[in-house]
Length: 470
Image (tube, helix red, strand yellow):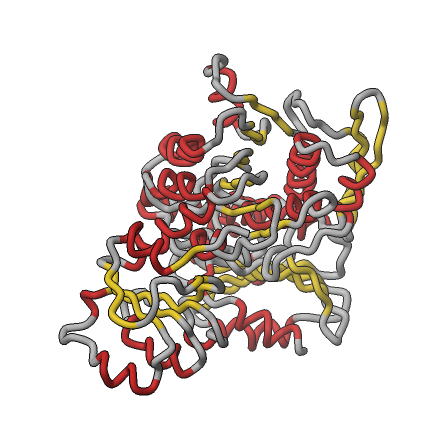
């Protein structure tokens, strides 16, 4: 196990110890005082509304043995003598910037482990792809995987700092601006990089899909020597980039359904409960069972097969890992309420690509009535109207019976769906989640199916929780 000491922070971050011992071992990092238990390390971050640095005494009361705090948050010197009276056995370290500090500490922690690290990025599908890869890798390794979507400039370092007796890591890497992935990949140092697709998420920040591609390719900056890049060959921009750049210093493995790829299925059979398909590996045919519906999950499983083969996991174990993987909540989470209504909870985040995939899945379900409850997709900038309208086209194309939209920009989903042939009487536009819930409770009947999807900021989890209880 790679141990980190307070003295390491002092060197890495030019930190100043104001209380305690530099020989203290650091483990179990958190930035949430409510999660702190005896022996934890608390690190404070200054947010837009709250300053976690100022809450360090709550962390100490809950048992934190070390606090790493940002010096600029304290206008006056800390009363060390007063703190020492009550917490003489604790350690407090001040650094210039706690975000920079956590990144440097995580980069150092990663350097102590010579293990497989799969770094996963893409416009959509990062979390679900990570889940299925981790399940496959767990057949051979003790895998540390990103919790939820802890994939940010703070979340990824906190994930890396959870490394203990693990001998592999499946880590999600998110970005919304140029340069962010460059920073994350240098911390994670992946041995295999995965790019699930290049879509429209964060296009408002980056200006074009081509710029999104460039930003996603930053993951290669941290790819270790002898590493492998795994890409979705059905994605137009990834396929084009791969073909136009033949002389790469790393191996590329492709997966896809439509375009000829290294890992490619046939005889795909889809149903409400998932998909099955066949695949030929080294002259032998295997049947793959994916227990979540939609072609995007077939693609996720193909990616997991590619990863499993890179690390010498036998196909029987790979198939078992795919069949039994657990999907992170609020990602295509399919449940039935007490009235027998099928509810697809995919409300953690949304962009055009994920909206399209979820609507297509709903459209293929056997149900008395198919209801789409859709909200705003955020961070699309000047492309917002166009992309919301494209979602409306998908609603109409997939024969959805009822469309309920909530939010400012989702009105474009509604108007475009009507323009493309959906009955106006079956389209509803609301400004609040409560209004949508009230209508849903009146409309929904047993054997109906309903999709609930929007960007996380729309708080559609509220709608799901009120409907799932009937």
